[in-house]
Amino acid sequence: MSSTPIDEWKKIAAYHRAALEKAELQINQLENPVEIPLTDDDMEGHAGYKYIWKRVVTKENLVDDVSSILNDCYDILCDKNERGVTNADEIGISGSLMWHLFTLKVIKYLKERGSY
Image 1 (spheres, rainbow, N blue to C red):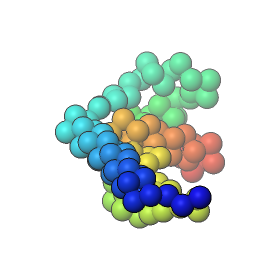
Image 2 (image 1 turned 180 degrees about the vertical axis):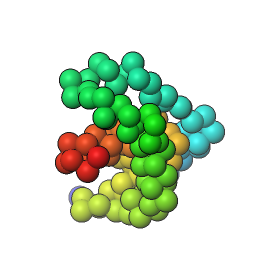
Image 3 (image 1 turned 30 degrees about the vertical axis):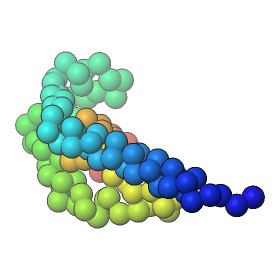
């Protein structure tokens, strides 16, 4: 069954509506970044909490250091992954809530691997 030119134009319009919606969401995230402060009280509730970990996070600026490294690598991190999806869809825009959660996941991964 062949599609009509009107059907093709409808598909193109739907594609562009979805792209516009995604762009507007990203603009909103950039214009209204969400800050997630990490406090000592937040850390104490976790099962793996230790004094040394607390010291690394609070006194040695672990969160700022990891955030800085990830921000420097943002363009590389946003390349397409093996599924053909840009990682920006999964990690968010720098400064967004998704980006902060991604940063915390990286820190958790580093801690679990014994890198910190």
